[in-house]
Image (cartoon, rainbow over all chains, first blue to last red; front, side):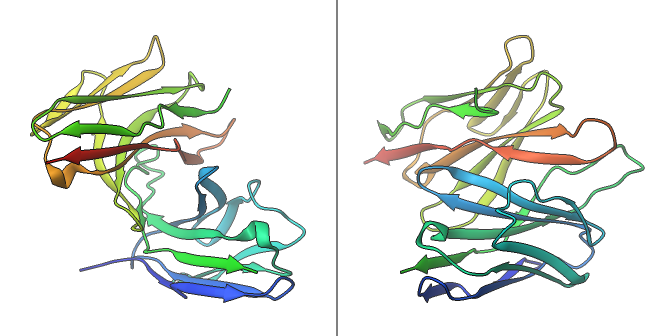
Length: 119
Length: 114
């Protein structure tokens, strides 16, 4: 059963530490998203990749967050330095996009999330 | 105005009740619409797409009103297992190009009581 895999599931760290979250999208999916979810803001889009190229990272605090896809099987989200306000659940999601069909991006498959607590 | 707005609830209903959720979106150029379901401490999962003519999937009915920029989800004969947060999702394009993004509402919490 294909699924998006995220690590770590839970992370507790202290303010100022570097945090790296990893995501393995579903094989064959060419679109990867990073979302952050909090009670106050709901699901917020942080970054969006298609065919490993970053298309939009306008939702990401640029000074401390960075997102990359070093290869088709790995997406990373890094926070350096982390702050208490970064505490949230970070979801990676993947989907299929077909330029031929005019953008078939519909269903996103989410990983189980990485719950980050910054003290 | 937020891109996607939902009534946050919570909705507390007895088993067997009919409950309706509403959602409005601000981008009139939005192209596709979905309802996702998220169980407590789990990831969101697609519940159903929303088509212009309205569509039904068992006890669930989704409707779209483009003129009013309004989406709804109706759950009939609600079950205990329907308890979850229901997220309204809108797909829209970026200005120019062929890039799309999915914007999620904050969700409506439903609790079905025995």
